[in-house]
Image 1 (tube, rainbow, N blue to C red):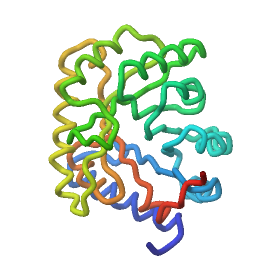
Image 2: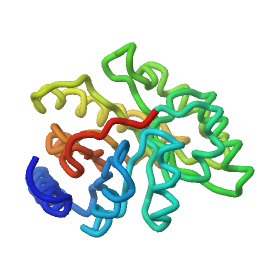
Image 3: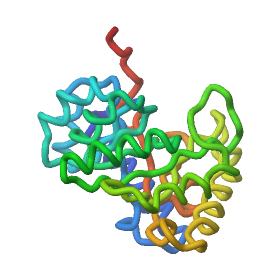
Image 4: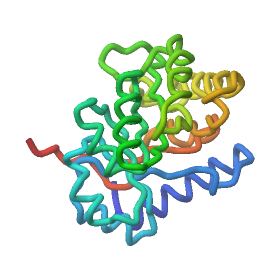
Length: 233
């Protein structure tokens, strides 16, 4: 992948604009989450200098240095979160995209309420029933949303999903459409669903298809930062 981080950011933003235009949307309605997991602070600085202000991390401990280096950026936790790290996650991140159980949601609620903070979260949905991936089955989504309605400190804002890996973005499209349909169904039932407006879906190889299917957040790492560095430890 050629060019500097600045060059790649420009290309990704152009692709976002074109995909938004094809779907009759404003590119301003799409949040580009630069997935900086495994990349050092110096690479984040390059993306920041190129104008990006929203970053995604998989691991609480790895993110800590980066969050402190760029406190005015918007930081999203996009990887699986263990309940015993909920306090730290609640203090570091502006969004948690990977809520996958009532227990985790309740623990985040407790930690945020203690801190006097309201944290926007997304529910991760396991659309394909893959055992290797986190996420709630679609059939359990309504119950999880119902449990969220009485919780303080968290606001469920939408859904997130990671479709099965594929080289062809068109093979991801049915999963994106399915997540959009689930969001619409959940939003129509009232209660916590009234604030459900966010769809986080699409990565470097398929984010244009995701935008065309209604994504409001796309999580792009390799197309911005290049090949993933190996995680220390």
